[in-house]
Image (cartoon, rainbow, N blue to C red; front, side, top):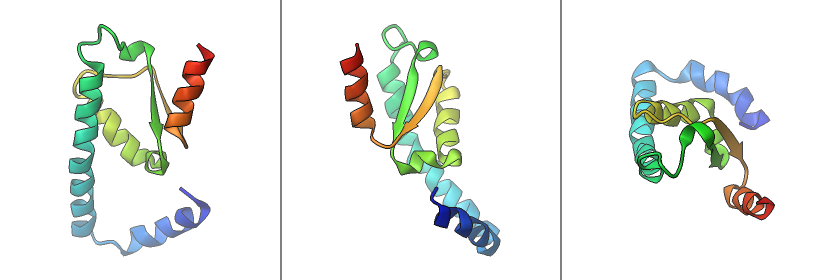
Length: 103
């Protein structure tokens, strides 16, 4: 969240009525489900990707919003998946390349 967004959040929070907030939360909750399902498929049975020994790397600005990140992690945890750590990066592809190059 940028400085401008941080300043705007209290104003936004004060002006949004509860039905609108609930509708927005429902939309975001539904939108995160395909990401949860994709991560579940990628982990599979845990025999290759072992979440308890793996860092989940999330790329992009939206992942810096703690609530959005928490929704993903709660969805994964509800399916028995908990990663050893969670890292938010600006450029996931670059971080992947860097990690592979270091091996």
